[in-house]
Amino acid sequence: MIRFENVTKRYRGTKRPALSGVDFEVQRGEFVFLVGASGSGKSSCLQLILREESPTSGRVAVLGRDLKSIANRKVPYFRRSIGSVFQDFRLLPSKTVYQNVAFTLQVTGASRGFIQQAVPEALALVGLSGKEKRLPHELSGGEQQRVAIARAIVNRPQIVLADEPTGNLDPGTSVDIMQLLARINAGGTTVVMATHEAAFVDQMQRRVIELRDGEMVRDEVGGGYGDTSNVPRLEPEAIRGAAATAALQTVREVHRETEAAIAEPVAAPAPADAPRNPRPTASTADDAPPASPPIVVPPVDLAELGVADRLGLDTGDDEEVGPVS
Ligand SMILES: Nc1ncnc2c1ncn2[C@@H]1O[C@H](COP(=O)(O)OP(=O)(O)OP(=O)(O)O)[C@@H](O)[C@H]1O
Ligand SMILES: [Mg+2]
Image (cartoon, rainbow, N blue to C red):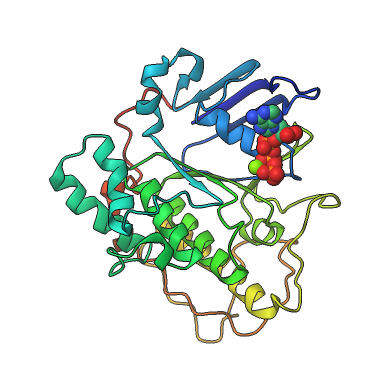
């Protein structure tokens, strides 16, 4: 779905390459964290995937196409298969929530009927029904990021790229945003997220690609943040404390429930005396102390994901692209 082959990116006027000999492949439906210190090349990777930048050498293929082969005038069409979420939300300040989400569809020439169905679905999925008429400045940071996510998924992209999507949010709100991205991924959308948030990465147990000075130093399935000695770390500070830890715990619970539900739609209820957080497999990394009672998260409603299949959240949607790379 996304493939980097020996990719080097050197920006004009810089001594050191931003990326150097980077090789990886992301499969359809994966959730991948891109981690590393500031300046290690995370945003550069995302820009290459979006064809906002081109590699100095090597090859980037996305959705089965070598990006070099896409003519400039076709790039906007290519980008419709990719939703983007940024740290600073990038909403249109004078447009309402509804208009911000609808705008993406309007510029791509979607029919009015489709817009009228898809926008409310996307807003419902991110939990913003009822706030359609608000302007961005009338929303909290977390709500603004939800609008940005609704905008990113409304066009049914196969891939969502998120560059530090929780960077401007407090820990509790960040957890909500992570849950949302996890749900979107659970519906089959490939998610690549650049982040500094070691705590999330540790808790989510997803694939981690780590960059250091432009070189890929780790590619680990279900890894944590790894050697964080020179990476700013979200420590369990007193101010963030137990509530954040407990909330992070729920992210994994949502994952487990989702995975269990997908694997086995009619899951037997756990016996009453079963441990509250049974572990699906033996995991030495799972040593976070059970903090205060976990925040109750409604089980992932697969029916809701089904309703949103027009947003590309189902798994059987392959139409507009060639072979998956
Ligand atoms: N347009 C540009 N022109 C010149 N150098 C750039 C450009 N964009 C990025 N760089 C350089 O490339 C390197 C990688 O930058 P990049 O933005 O990819 O890092 P990052 O991992 O996203 O960092 P951060 O965590 O701070 O966002 C840095 O040394 C940066 O200064
Ligand atoms: Mg960056």
